[in-house]
Length: 173
Image 1: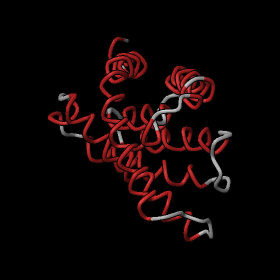
Image 2 (image 1 turned 120 degrees about the vertical axis):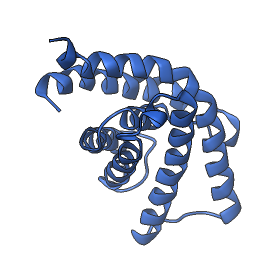
Image 3 (image 1 turned 180 degrees about the horizontal axis):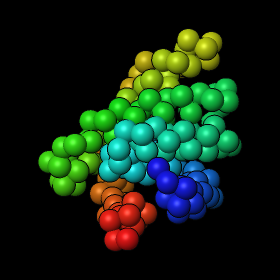
Image 4 (image 1 turned 180 degrees about the vertical axis):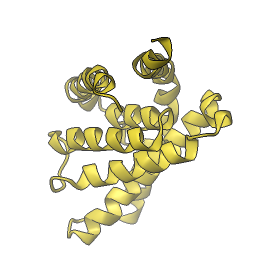
């Protein structure tokens, strides 16, 4: 990732973080709602190479750790998102059937978000955090999958245009 691409993508994630903290976290949706920063980071990773996916996970993970709604220790979300974004980018890298089909990206994003939240839960239990009841956890994971499947197609086009604008500059030069 060149320094220019980093400076172009940093304001995108900063603005998504501010929208998440100011607007989306104030919404009271049934079944737990959604996390816009997590969705954007996973879509960005699905459209990128594995190295850029890991860097995306690192930046989004730090932002998630700094969020007021996060109760885990510092670095918990960073570790989870580095792993999730790298794996998602690795699965989509080199296969134009996945990158070229929006339904596949939405499916990967939804599965990746549920897997990331489950990994966050497992690591949290290993770190000594309380998890809650199994029914509550399943309801929260199902609600996250539901809202991610609804929100992802709405932001996919915008994120793909911004992503191609940031990383498509090299081919135009």
